[in-house]
Every structure is written in structure tokens, then in C-alpha cells.
Length: 237
Image (cartoon, rainbow, N blue to C red; front, top):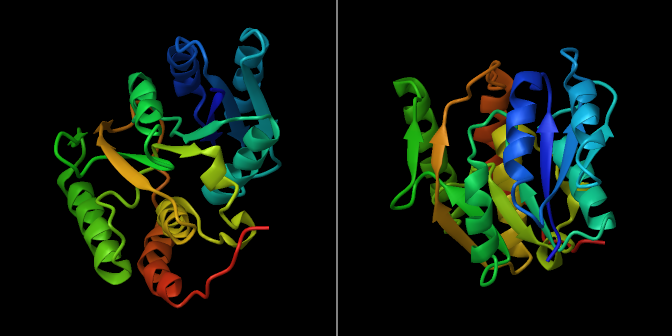
């Protein structure tokens, strides 16, 4: 097994060192940070950590803030080109617990895509304000009703892909960003015949920095399910 964690970053410098230290405690794990030219020096911090990682961490520098979706797609391609057998998605803000990574990898033995879920038994949200709890729960309910996807946490950003499924996803046609990006990927995974599973996680509000939520992200997320159900089937190249 050769798993690689892809972590997009934009202004996440205070969070990066503790996150990388925790991830590299898992012996087989590789880490790829995809930085969008963070003005706070996150990219430089990532380079410093990579230099001390004995080859287990690398950094992909992109020019400008190009968005979460494109960061992940570039990171996926780099991880696959590097021979990853499993590709994990993870936020840089310490809201996802690195100790859960082995659980996602274990669950991938019987699933092509494993989602760390806040909305299955045992899953929880910690330190979130009431308005965000309501928005997140409603967003997932809304997506399920329209798309009929059998997924409780469609917007989860903590995931583990088996290589075989990820290579079948038509990454060139993925157009969404933010939370909508996660929904679109889950939709394409099901269309590609992937076996999906959810395991419970505790999602903790970020410790440092500001949330990337915006009005544009909310509007995009509201429109996406309707676009998905109208989308014709295609095959990955």
C-alpha cells in the first residue's frame, strides 16, 4: 500500500506543522501539500517541512488563489503520477483528525471511496455555531433529496479513494469549488460504479485562521444538484 494525503492550503501556516507531524507518524503515509501562493508564507513553511520529511512529503506550488476544486484535481493527478495506491483528501485546518486516517484506509478494503461522515451514528460536530450546524445539515438533506445519492455526508472533505476508482473519474469535467466540489465528486464516483462507504468522524471547528465559506460557495452548492441530475454520462479519459 502506498497512500498519499492531498492537502490544499491557502493561508494555513499556523496549522501546517502540527498537522504534518501527526500525519507522518503513520509509517506508510505520504503527504502532498498543494499551496495556492498563500501570502502568509504557508508555501515556504511547507517547503521547510518537506525538506525535513526524508522524502515523505512534497509540495505543489500553484500561482494565485485558484480554488479548492482545482487544487484537489492537480493534487490527485500528481499523487496518481507518483504511484499512490490510495489518495486521501483532508483539510489543513486541523478540523480532521489525523488519527482517523488508518480507519479510512482500513475501510477502503471493501469500498472504493470512504467518506469520514459527521452524519452517521457515532459522527459528531464539535464547537460549531448553531447557524453552521443548521446550514450543513440542511445542505446535505437538500442534496440527498434532489440527487438521491445514498450518502449521509455529501459535503465531507475527509475521504479516501482507491486508485482504481479515482482513475475512472472524469476530472477534466469537474467544475465546482468548495463544498459543491465534494458533492460533484461523490456523484461521479457513484456514476463510475464505485462502492461508497461512510465511517463516523468527529469534525472540530478550525483552531486558527478564517473559514473559506462565502456567498458564492453557498449559491454554487445550491445550484449544483440540479446540474448533476441533468448531466449526461461520460467516461474518464
